[in-house]
Image (cartoon, one colour):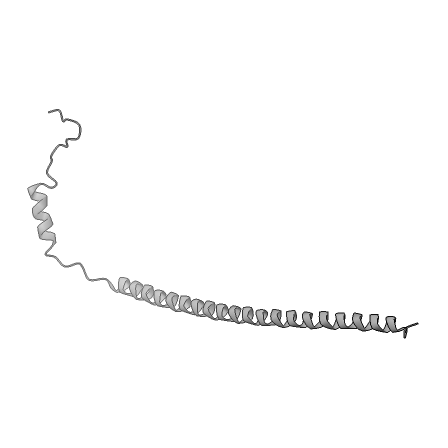
Length: 111
């Protein structure tokens, strides 16, 4: 029998015998884990808890680090503002000093 393009040959997914085996396997409970398997599962659980605790600690340290970096940024901004204010004061003092020097020179008090 030749199939047209796009047609699929219909075949049963499972034989009646296989289908009855599938239905019977649903009624059985999985075997209980052995003592070795229980030990392994317990160790895996503890290992996961340890990993979780370590990652929580790492994340807490990152939070602390970012908080400190933010504080440093705020302090740097404050220092920058203070430095700018000091530079303005120094510029004003320099201008006043030059003005006084010109006045002294104009009055002839400087030799």
